Amino acid sequence: MDLTMYHGKHIAVVIRRGGCHQVFRCTAVFQQDEDLGPIVRIPLEDEGEALPGNPAFILKGSEASGCLVEDDRYGCDFLIDVGIKNDSHQATQDG
Image 1 (tube, rainbow, N blue to C red):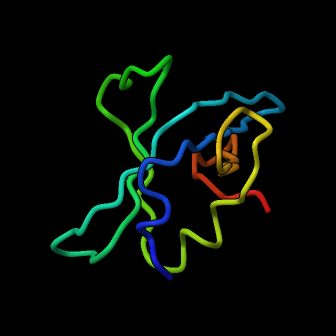
Image 2: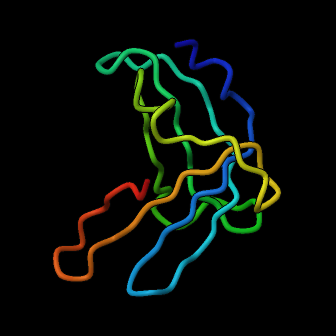
């Protein structure tokens, strides 16, 4: 899979927790990581500004195609839908 196709694309990151959700509109960056190899970095942004601590999702290889879905519902090119379990604070991807 050619991860460069995601570089510069707009990604809607939907984070769901406890029946609520928040949408972040982000811009994906293709990078070559020394340890992980080719990755797609999705820095979380609010109104185009980085969030405190610069949180980001990092997807490598086939993870990108399994997580990123073409979807313009939030005005972006792709969507990643993440659920957070209330009891364990662990992120899971909702299918």
